[in-house]
Image 1 (cartoon, rainbow, N blue to C red):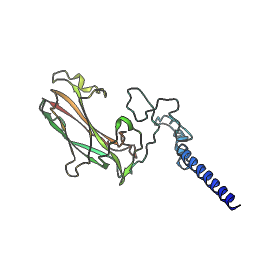
Image 2: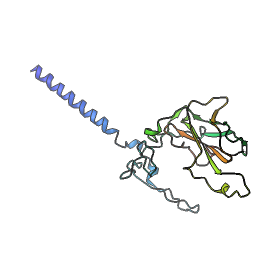
Image 3: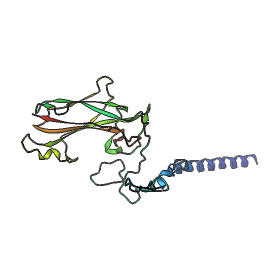
Image 4: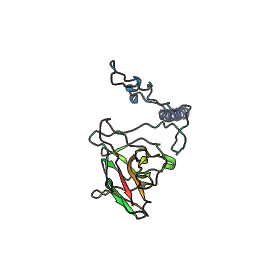
Length: 243
């Protein structure tokens, strides 16, 4: 009798454990009601839309299934369009917004052709040194904070504006193709608190005019997300000449 009762209790405990385990696993694939943001359920248009706002897309469940029947990004680089269903994540306060300044080269500065020169810059309110593998974790995790600041890193990129100095500077006013760049660097390591970062451009560049820019990113390489629309830029660019 006692043996049968103990066997019954053991079977019941195993069943409860299995049910709790499967329920726990299922919870990861369910949008919990506490996470629903009602702002996504309305288009945001004011009664007097003299400004000219366009209606926001809406969804009752935080767009959790937005990527249905779309090609998923899934942590991978792709030359084609894709859909990333990862949430934006933690957004800093307006006291912790990211800012960057390039201190070398200065605007209009000249540097010598084919000679190594540095790109020097400093950041504000970015917990630097956090870089995930972009070949398998691209945009695959939300933005996070450390001490109120976004955790991430900076990319540095240089593009040619036009080839050589001449009297016809038509190319100067044409936005450069983002797919074409002459230098790109993902900056690892934490920023030096006193001197910032210094990224060498080994062997320099050919004669021409260039634009150097920083691109502040989260650990998983997506551009940093700020808490307000009206603000200064989080990145910096300088135009310089190689002679």
